[in-house]
Image (cartoon, rainbow, N blue to C red):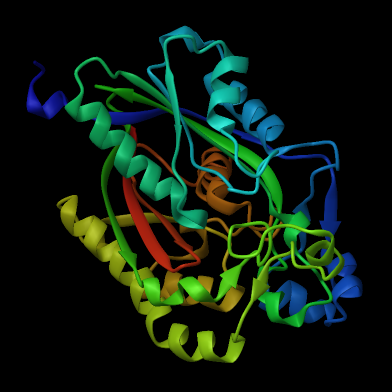
Length: 340
């Protein structure tokens, strides 16, 4: 057994894949009949990545996985965990198994974690727990893909807050005993009351797919009772974003005074700035995804990749990965960046 101080899980490498297709704010404004100013300044979107019709979630996840692994031998992986969109190549199907097979990760078991846009924090929490309790589990690949821009109807004003949905893939290689980019603690909050509001109406057992559901456009994301959801969500959302960060820091033996960088999912611009202010961070202590859009649970990996490339994070920095997923679940994971 290793010394407890060495019993760490670190992020060995990250990888992303972004499709070449783009959709800019002007195009979104034209499609949705909302002002360009609202798209850019309220929604916080200058452009976003959009996959080609033939480009599937597994394709993007696999490319991101290969970018994360680099020269790492896939045969040394003990697990491949998919944490991306449940809208995949096929409705009832394991993307994780395809990625495991295509990578040649012959010694890895494959499984999936689904917690919508908060899934990266959940996957980090679960993977770290497995790695620290199972002696033989040394290397785990977390991988995701999303093509949820295809689930948005720009003529449906009820889903306006989802117009930022974009496409791409992201992956992270986790290694036990690695004293680099160490994963500290995670905190999640779920308010299951909100389960009823955001859904794809047809295609499940409650409303099986049919010609009628297709003709009625029921295979696109829908928000039921938007005013009711807003009434209940507004009083708790910001508070829960702040709370999960504070609690994750507390579990990690830190406070908000120790926080150096915030890596959030793509949020509306006003909420993003409110969170920076709440944690007393300046814009250089975060990265806003206005040129990427919201690539489901992959956003934080893209933020970390850009932050490292731009020199915004350094050894020793305490980073909070922050997300929320409809349903509703909020989550934050604390990372101590760089070499210990």
